[in-house]
Length: 422
Image (tube, rainbow, N blue to C red; front, side):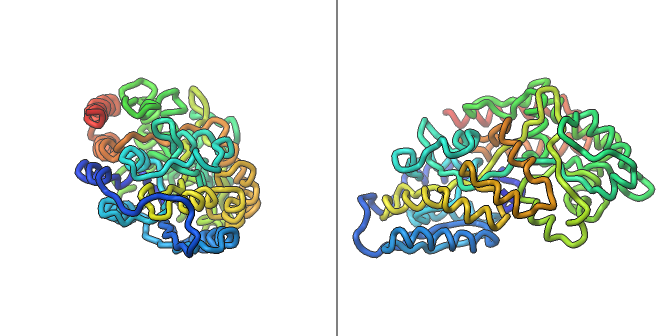
């Protein structure tokens, strides 16, 4: 999800007060399909995807002539704040996009309708996404698309430095050695941008070291482990070695801008970056993408993706569930794939996305499914991601040593997770 649209996913989940409000809200009464005219509101956050969503809505209306879909776009930075307010007031859309960090909050408070009692088959989607949108044994989100992470590199900078391009089987040692060779202080050039990005960087490296950010049940912090420390030090060591801009430099200038301006040779990024890079006249023809480097336990990528969910309080619940399922089904997936914007989640439909930008080796994003790990979430993800951001910013800046910082993060995060369970 283009961080998503862009990067941080780690997002705007509701406050504790709003959580209570969510469980109390109500609007229409669910019932059987309506015989009359029905208009379903469909809330999304990406204007770039609106044309594809309009085609999907038209295809659904063709099959269900009495149902019209009203697509409502709210920019991502405002989306969950608006959704929280609407859900509390009983006016949330009939069908809306959901992401992993916010999912459990809404599912646990009865705001979402289960979809696995209808026409959806979980076997049609990557297991990591099914797990992400399952709560208390029920599937509440129909996976719409997914994103994995891979390593983008500037071929011109590699060629100038005489460094071999990244390839499958590259290890962390290969990665860090190449970063050093590609660094040229006289030119203000760095081998890599070791940004403090979870989804793109350290969530992956922690898994590659054999660790976890959070336990599968969302109740235990994994930051206190030696594996998590190794996953963090991969990045902080690159900064200390001078192979990456400093934390302050990456605060002053967006890390991706270093890559786009040709000042950084390597940049890990999600599959959403492909179309953006292809459209960038300055860099589009100079870059390509490769699998992530391999740590002690593999080259795992985090998998995330948008889910279509149905408002459990919709006045037209039957139609809402049908549309949520349709908008994540095979026909809709093919419509999405042809735009090249996102990778559709429905198995067997991804090739059109790969083919949409043949100048890049986009198959690496599909291959990453083989050992992908779910995006780390809990019932109220923002309760600990705010702690994560604050503590790790001190680690990235060098103000706190990684080992001490991660123990502090582990303790604070665990306290927040324990409070969720009370």
